[in-house]
Amino acid sequence: MKKTIKRKVASRGTQKRVEGLAAKVAKVDSKHLRSDLPDFAAGDTVRVHVRIKEGEKERIQVYEGLVIARRNSAGGKSFIVRKISHGVGVERIFAESTPKVAKVEVVQLGRVRRAKLYYIRGLVGRAAKIEREVETIAAAEASAAAKSAKSAKASATK
Image: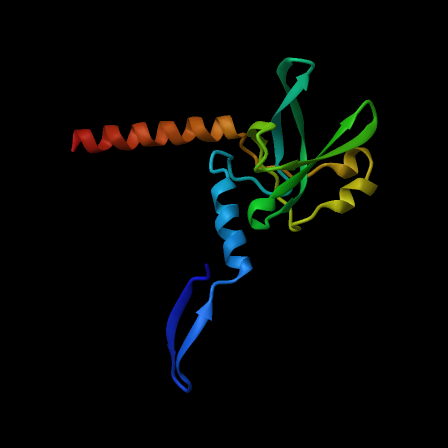
């Protein structure tokens, strides 16, 4: 059953528009989107908690590395995390909507000017470092809590 929407066009009078396949796909994708993941971008260091099933047991393995790319296409959102393991660069692609990703923690924010950091693959050692924000996230949260406590104290004395 196709849903028709009538709209008025200035030159042609009333025109029927049929809701297409793209709109239906977008509706289905919106049901599977996750809202529990934090905001992060390329250049950030993240800790991804991955559910791994071994036989009948399930455990969580932590994968920490640099986000070198994000793909944001509705239900197909994914991100690539790169880490150095025993001197070898390892990249892993995680889909945001999969239940295998238990949670994502942002360890450190990075300051970069690119959306895709594929050039990091060719760099070695110190050259592969990303410029970081001066404060760590824990320090930023502590300073924000201190500021809010200070402002609450100041408003209480007035």
